[in-house]
Structures are given as structure tokens and as C-alpha cells.
Amino acid sequence: MDALEAILTRRSTRKYQAVLPDNALIDQVVEAGRSAPSGGNSQTTHFILITKAEILSELAWIVQTAFANMEIREDLYASLKNSINASRRGGYVFHYNAPVLIVTANKKGYGNAMADSACALENMMIAANALDLGSCWINQLHWLDEDEAVREYLYGLGLSEDETVTGALALGYPAEGLPNRTPLPRTGNPVTRISD
Image (cartoon, rainbow, N blue to C red; front, side, top):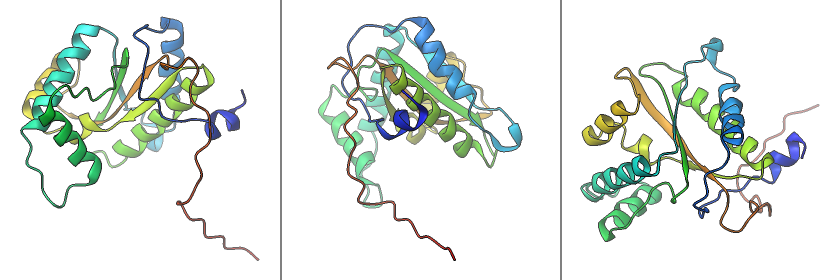
């Protein structure tokens, strides 16, 4: 699969097999993230790679509890409201039970923290598709970056106090075998062309 095909056929996976991919595949995905561009070549994106089922389960419980305790306000966007409502119903697993979760963090106050991490996450999603792995961008830990219980747990996993959680990636073998590669129609993302 060439690079353009890997980009154009990438789709989010939200159902995973319980099988942990080989470390060699996981390492290739992480290396793709580490090779992403960064502002001034700062290379400050921190990757916290979690494959231990017990840790993923504990983190899911902490996230569910944090969301269940949040107030639903009118100014919240729909996906955040959905996470809160799902948490209140119980059984909410923010990472879709993927056997791998790669949390990204970057330096607090660094102006390119989100951009650098977004480039890394996108690189990892494209690499996952090329390697026949499913992936999905996960925002919930970023939304809960200031939640004390979530941060304390992440400190135990290697997050530094001077870092902000910028996102995460669920990764694994799709439940249906290969990733869904059917392109979605593009009805948004307008292009304005200025030319001679």
C-alpha cells in the first residue's frame, strides 16, 4: 500500500479483537508517530504505550467515573455530552476495548503541543492502516486533562507534571479482520482555490 492509499483509505475502528498485536507492529506504529514533524524540530511529544489489560481496565473505570461526575452544559459539544451520558449509564469504555492505547502528551504552555501531537497521531493512524491494524483517535483523556484522579493515575504511568495530555490512539486488530477501508464521502472541508 502506498502512502496516498494509506491516507485515503484510513477509517476509524471502534470494535477490536482481544488479541494483542505483535510488538514489532506496535513499535512500527509508534515509530511513525515519533517521526512526525514538530515545531522547530522540538520532538517533545511523549508517547505512553499501554498494552497491559489490567491498566487499560482501571483507566477505563477512572475515565467513566470522571465523566459520570461531570455537569452537562449547553456549551459542551455533542461528543463530550455523549461520553458523559454513556458514563452515567455504566459500562463505558472510552478506548473501545482496544488492546493497545497510546497516550500522547506534550509540554504545558508549549504553543505547538496540540499540533505536534496531532501530526504524531495522524502518522500513527496511517501507519496502522498500512499494517492492517485498526486505530481510532481518542480525545477523552485530553478532555479530562485537568481531572485530578485521571492525572494522578497517568502520573503513575509516566506522565510528567509539566505535561498536558493531548490525545490518544486506540490500536489493534479490527473485529472484522481487516480495517474498513471504504472511503467516506467528503461533504465538508471546503477548498478555496486562489490561482491565475
